[in-house]
Image (cartoon, rainbow, N blue to C red; front, side):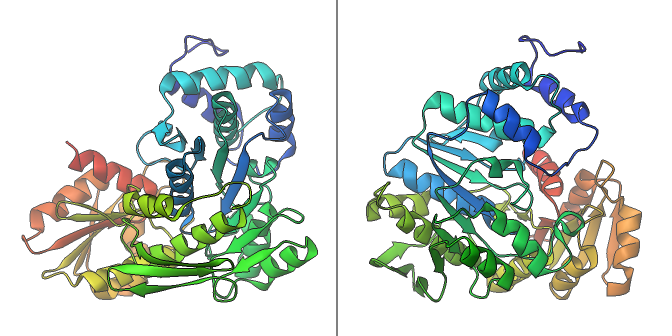
Length: 421
């Protein structure tokens, strides 16, 4: 690979180069990335911007919001992270993922503008999404925060409206070790006088304090809007009225109703700028899909969850399924995740766990993961990697058994590669 990028580079070459460009994989802060965005003419954004932060549920909320505006006829950009199998998943315009050529074109523009300013892998990707959205002249851009909020690269854009999903203990090395500290970081996406939606019924006080200081028009679940399930449909009630007989989100899981309810409240805050019909909302709910979120593939259920809150949602879903046979667990996790807390919530439902090692400096190898789970009394089998763990689980599974694959995006991606062979 040449020392400096060229227009002939492939997407793989660009991504490999970005990974070694900055000495740190994560460096929170906005000064560097904002300076490059200004040189590219990306700020202030022309598109109406929705920023979505939180611990869990960001991906499905972002995807639904973008789908609603697309169904309503607006040209829409969606930026999410991390990707599951292909980097291109991170950037979509009107539901179509960015091509390799599009991304390489954006990267070259960023490289020519950045000069001596170092950028991380994530910062390059964020700028590329904003550049592509600007070039496509999108009317709406939905931006999912990668880590935290206040110092995340996405936060260089002033959101016209923001949504904060649930707040749990994740990325504690960066954001703080309690909900109040983490909430304060995530509330950094709020802007003076601009509306925001909270999806939790009992959000951290730190979030409410930031919103009050900034005089943010706040919509809170249970106070300003709410939802109620009704057999095969549901009802949403907001400040301007109700929507009855809405179709259930196509994405499985009881939590999806709460997430969808927050998205509808977000859409409500922008109805003066971006009117949306009930038909557009219904169509988006019916088509909501997101790989790796309680996804069924044959005998397997795959979920990218990796913290205690996600494990609770997965456990609740498993109880609702009432599988006829055993639940066999394929688990791979990163070292900085709450391994014991995550597995403890699943342990009562699991007959046997097949542990796979994950690559990279943050990945736990199977023997270490097995040692950390020993105190839970879970019956485990250590395997070299996720493909081996999945193949062993499938070989031992009876027709009525369910194989659950979880613990990380990396875990689910490796499993999908096996299942698609």
